[in-house]
Image 1: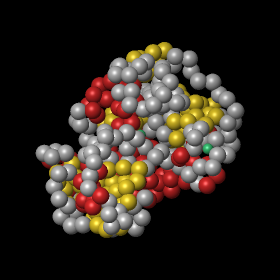
Image 2: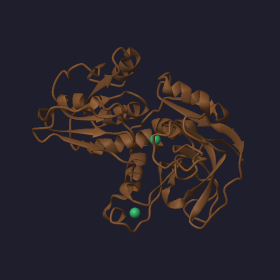
Image 3: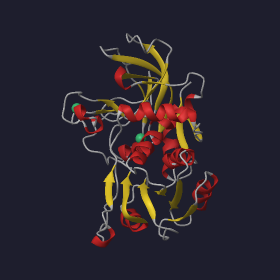
Image 4: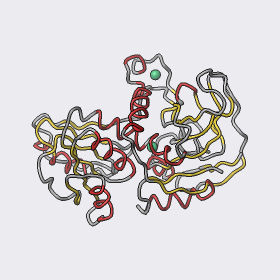
Length: 326
Ligand SMILES: [Zn+2]
Ligand SMILES: [Zn+2]
């Protein structure tokens, strides 16, 4: 089968003919229809994640059809999605207390397990989620990471009513729709001068949109940082009220500069969100069509993955970049 493979840090993906995956007990084989590209894929390409097992087939926002299966609930032809969390042990202290996202043995799609930048992928059936068979595969793909991580980050904000969003990319586009649906207000902080992102936020219902260096127009109950820029942490802490929460939503972030304790004082909380649980996926994938969340995607062919990545890196993609398989 054809796949885009990564052979080392700071290298382009290479189109290769590789052996198609074989079925194993508990797994299914999926014909990939579409696979979203995520900022985490950029960190993977840049060698910023630990212990990358080269060569890697990236891609963890997979939408496809079941090609081979022994699972009664996932028959051949079923439309499924495969997210970043691709395996957990089920027995460690994290798995048994509802925090399988922190499992020490976790497997990650498109990182420690082969991903969806390929014609086929093998997935653990426990981590495949049935999706609407009628929707466009490309439109569904961003829900599987950008949507899910944003949703998990939001759950960490509790019942916050005014929420700051730092970095208005793919995840924020989807989360904004959840926030409007839940009648919460949001404040979008973008790179100074990025009027396109500020306009996109306003179009999606932001109460305010401006530069990340600007003061929030009023104290916020919580803030979510999607941009991988550590210097946003003290800015976000300064924007939230006493008792407020700042959630870091990325897998990688540049160093956080030192800041005055006064920014954390007042029982403000600074937390990260790591991976996802199956419960997050079940909840969010049921909620998304009820809102309904509309994704904005720019599609590329599998062998144009490097072009898609360059456009994502330079901030030229509005919404999400998605590879579409023929
Ligand atoms: Zn992702
Ligand atoms: Zn575990």
